[in-house]
Length: 85
Image (cartoon, rainbow, N blue to C red; front, side):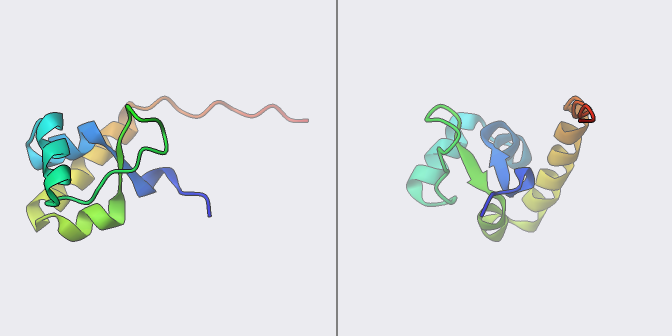
């Protein structure tokens, strides 16, 4: 099964949503206070499974996560149009 982009949350987004630094997020994951990240995008780019993360976050952090994701989505450039074949 291929993951949808929304299934994964990047380190910086998790940190902003929780009001922590990226290092604090990594430390909490290592301590078991957050789910372990996946490194399937590369060892320098940890990402968290969104569903697992939401299950462990307090409600306020979930609301902030959704708000931060909305802002991040607006920053991304629109997809390139596909040429007709």
